[in-house]
Image (tube, rainbow, N blue to C red):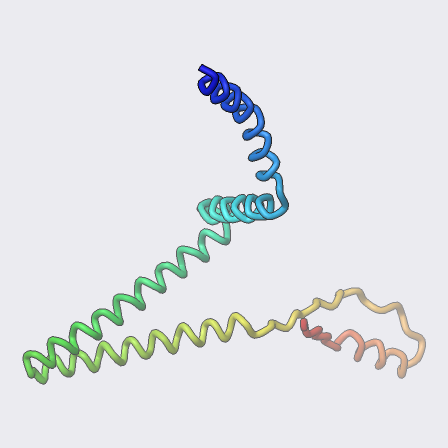
Length: 156
C-alpha cells in the first residue's frame, strides 16, 4: 500500500513539474532560433506560392529550365544507349543532334546568367528647360553646349 501511495504522489509531482520544465526548455535561445528559421521558411514558401509575385514567376521559370535540361540530358543518354545497342548510324546522328541541342541550351543558360550579373548603366534624363536669354554670343554658345550634353551615371 505504501508503494502505491508513493507512486501516486510521485506521479502527481511529475504531472506538475515536468510541463514547466519542458516549457522552460522550449523558450531557450536555440529553440527560438529554430522556430524563427522555420517560420521564415514557411513565409518564403507562402510568398513563392502567390501567382502575382516575382518569386513565384522566378521559381516556376527555374523549374521549367530544370525540366528542359533534365529532358535533354535523358534524351541524350537514351539515344546514345540506343545507338550503341543497335549499331545504327541514324541513331548516332540523332544522338549528335540532341547533344548539340543540349550544349546550345547550357550555353544559353550560362549566357543569360552572366547577363543578369552585369550591372546596368542608369541613364538620367536631362530636363528640357530652356536657358534664360543670354546677352553675348559666347554665353549663348555655352548654354547651347550645356543643353546638348548627355549625362550617363553608372551604377556600381
